[in-house]
Image (cartoon, rainbow, N blue to C red; front, side, top):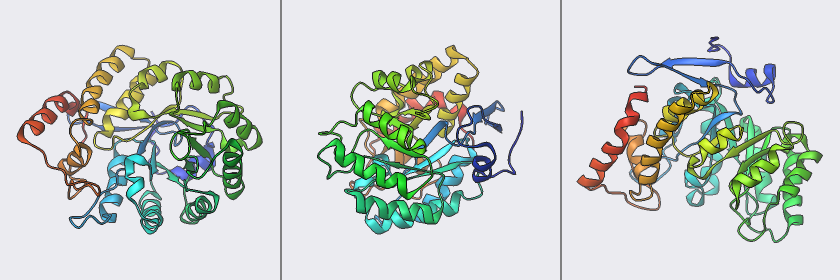
Amino acid sequence: MTIISNLTRREWLTTVGATALYPERTTSQSPNNTAVTASRDPLRGVLMIVATPYTTEKAVDYEDLAAEVEFLDQRGINGLVWPQYSSDLPYLTHEERLHGMEVLADASRDRLVSLILGVQGTNTDQMLEYANHATAVGCDAMIAMPPSEAHSIDDYREYYTALCHATDKPIFIQTTGGAADRVEPTVEFIIEMSERFPHFGYVKEEYGDTLARMKQFKVHRPNTIKRIFGGTRARAWTYEMRLGMDGTMTGGPQYPEVYTRLWQLHLENRQAEVRELFSQLLMITNLEQYVPGLRAYLMQQRGVFKTHIGRDANYTFSPDAIDEIDYVLQPLKSHFIA
């Protein structure tokens, strides 16, 4: 096993290329002295949506945002994604998005983890402002939801064509968000754009019958479609793994070791262990629907965030809710790295 601690992810991308499929590995130790290995291909495996921390005054806590980068990198995450819906995207101001990009770029610059910046905008002009800033601060890839002001596939085509001309970085299209509730980002459209612009062929699939669409994209991989990721809280991840998808892009920074362990077990074809661990993960993922603020609470409990405050709510946790969190989290703790 090769340890590449002296190689930054930008050097990796330059040397190996973003199309490399089988990465170097890095190893860390869990508290039970079991080696936790994770694929460190920067654009394959676990792409974690970074949570946005807040101060007691509900301002973005940029210090904790930078600390989150270190926390996730040390636990083998392949890439960081920000901002997305799981990052409180609808509640972030224009200035907060720009400054957050700068903070994340600085914090991740000499690390193995890749940085994928969300540049989605309500229209093409706004998206280009974010994309140009992402280029200026330095990122490894970009992701963009459809524009909310779009009314047709032609509007999508104009928007994503402008993005492809603005950067030569890999571009992920997220198939939900924006206008996707009324204008479907069809498989045919995404393939068309990927044929025109090779760096566009990266897909985060969350629209409609996601598994059927993934299988349609898979036929065009690797020449046209470069990567296919699932989302939707990684609830179908084992199915996606067995279909040969490239990883998951999800919001679970409170227990990143579990995601990296699942990916490693999958690469090693240890399917029974994947099934057992994924079943345990689903218990806490399901609980998030019933205990608002659970993610921020666990990030505070793990010493990454100073508060568990949300911008859109003041989270409180009853004794029975805390007891349930501890109960469903217990099987996962053996994978945690202190």
